[in-house]
Image (cartoon, rainbow, N blue to C red; front, side):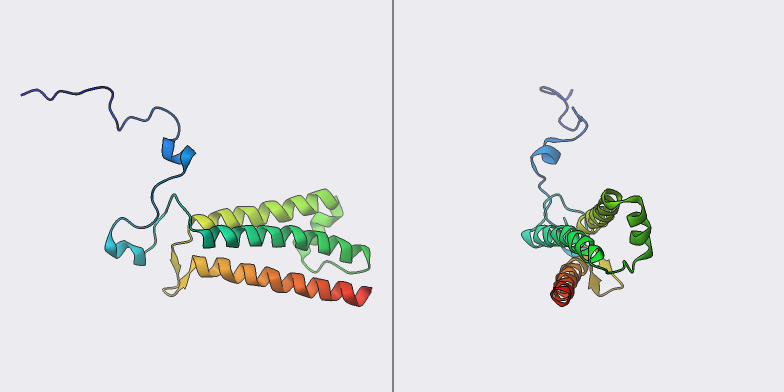
Length: 148
């Protein structure tokens, strides 16, 4: 008995990505009950991950601006990589800072459901980074108050 097919093969890719890539995916969690302990990749990120990524990137940009202000008022850059970037100019300094942070955030957000060291989730690392940037910005604002 021949199998009758109608239309095109649905599993065939028509373009580089699927409609789920362009319109937002469907996978929000693991497919099987036991898989959530090991971590899985998802297409849809919850609002907590997105909020942490936005807060960290905003903190990175504000940190760069406040650092430049402090450097103009006599401070010294303690990070040797960023100090070397400052020797190249302000634009390379800010570009390097934002690109490095953005690349790391992309990797962390992609792996937000994974577990490190049996107990530490990557999502918790994102939360700690957001809190760390908030503390750093408060510290820099306190330094600016001392200068003024």
